[in-house]
Length: 217
Image (tube, rainbow, N blue to C red; front, side):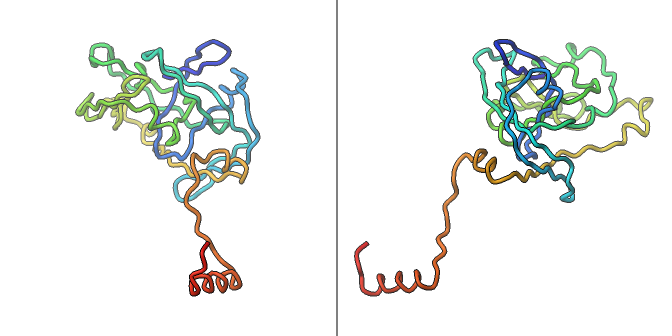
């Protein structure tokens, strides 16, 4: 659970952390309800097997907050999608009272309850939300990672045998490559990579002449 700060108010939403995604995504419902400012873009989202999974014509800006760290404030941008993902987990799993299972604060105390995803936090924001701290063999065979939003669980969420059914066999994959128009690509870049200089035949001739005669530059 994360908080989006807008108009001097914090609004709580459910997020999926996915460092396999090049950038972050937010649902159209959240953008519309909060009236988050948008910028027009043209973006195509491709996933596994290079198949196009979505397109977006809007990018919005917002501020992320945390209920555990009152000083934390992160300016973020995300592509707007009609739907970020299917509900996660695929089905709700009865694990009893989570307060008795964990001695550390969970980012999502209802992680076992199937629900919609409002925001996908990609590789652009991932390094800025991770905190020191790993716990292994947590709840069956999972791992817990500390984040600014609390501890998140990674690993399989296995239902009791009585809950096994065909619905649970659905598999979700979140690996996103995003192609955007030139304007937004320039907007998105953090820094420019070194440029390789390609010379025409005439320019190369002049360059060789300078080198040969040791002409100072």
